[in-house]
Length: 179
Length: 349
Image (cartoon, rainbow over all chains, first blue to last red):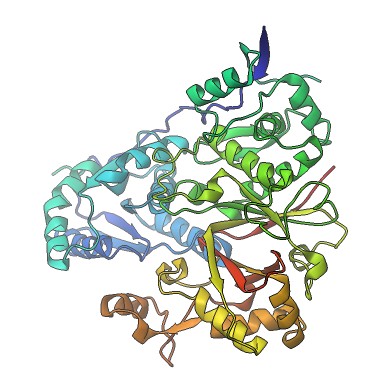
C-alpha cells in the first residue's frame, strides 16, 4: 500500500542571469566606488589603501559607508546606495566575510550592476560560495567576485595594508581595467 | 479543492515517510506527518485564502511561497488545522521587508523567527504562555507553529545551515519557537495592543531573536532595583547592538515572569515607564571595553559625553512580554539581531 503526498519544496528563483559589465578601458578619469559597512576594520583599511592607489592612477575614488538595512536607517542606506550608484562609473562592494555582510555586499553590488555599471563584490575565501549563491538568488549569477584571504579581520593593520597593495592589481583586473 | 504541488508516492508507513523526508532533506531531523491531500486540505479549509495565493518569495533562495506550500509544511510540522491561520500570519511577518529575511536567513548569527502569540485563542490552540513556555510545556500550538515557519524557510526559502545559511551555531529555536503572552497576568497593555491591535484580536508577532538569554534575581527588593539590574544584564558587552554603527534599529524582547511583572507594575504602572527606566539604565561605561574595542565604539560615535555606551537608541526598542511560570526569580532576553524590525500581524480566518 502506498499513499500520495505533496512535495513541500519550491524551486529557487529562476536561474536567469543578468548581464555583467566591465570597464574595458583605462582607469584614469573614472569615478570608482568603494563601499563598506563601517564594521570590518580590515576592509576599511583596504578601502583606505585603494583610495590612495586609485588617486595615484588618475581615478576618483568615491567611498560609501552603507549603514543599517531596516527602519529609518534602512531608508537612509537605500538612498545613499542609490546616490552612490548614480555618482560612479564602476565600483566594489564589500566586505563579504560573514553571512549577512556578504548578502548585503552582494545586494549593493547588484544595485550597481542593475544600473549597467561594472561591479565587483569583495568576499573572503570562506564566503565566496555564499556570495555566488546570493548573487544567483538575486538574478545576477555572474556577478564578479574578488576573493580575498580568510580570515582578514584581526590581522595587524600593517599586514592588511600589504594585502591591500598585493590585491589592488587583481581588483583592477576583475573590474576589467585595461591599460 | 485543487492543489498544485507535485505528488510523490510513498509506502503507507510513518517510518517510510520519515526516511523519505530525511533523504529528500525536507525536515529538521525529527519525524514529520505525511502531507496527504486530505491533511493539507484540512489546513487549507481553515483559511479563507486560495491554495495558489502567493504570500511572497522567501529568502535566501526566493522560492515562491504559496498558501498551499505553507499548508503542506504546516501539515508536516503537525500544526492543527485551526492553528494554520497563525502560521500564515507568522509567515507574513517574516516576509515583511522590514523583518529583513534576506539578511536573517543568511547571517552567521544564530537569529531565527521567534513567534509570539496574543489573543483569545492562545489556550485552545495550545500556545504555551505559562510554565515552560519556551520549551517543555509541550502545547501543540507552541511546538508546531514555529516549526512550520522553520520548515517553510527550509523547503521554500532554501535555508540550510552551512549552505545558504552561514549560521555558526544555530540555536534550539531553529526547530521552531512559539509562545504566548500571559496577558491576564500582565499589569501592562499586551504586546499586540502596543502594536496597534485590540485585545480581542488574534495577533502573531515575529521577532528576529538571536537566542534565549536567561537571568535570575532574588536580591533586589525594590522593583526599581530589579529593573536596573535587568537593564545592566541585557546590556552585556558582546550584545549585537554594540557591533552596529548606531543603536537605532531592532528590538530586544524582554520576557518578564508574572511575579516580577506584578512587582514592576506597582512601580511602573505604564509599560512605557518601565521601558524608559530600563532603557536609560541599559548602558555600560566605556571603561568596561578593552582598548581596541573602545576605540571602535568611539569611532562609531557610540560613546556619549559621560563615557556611556547605550545599548540602543530608544525605550521602545526594549519590548517587555509577560509570560512564564509563577516560580518567579527568572527572566529571559530574546536578544536582538538588530537589523530586523519586529512584525505583528492579525490572524485572518
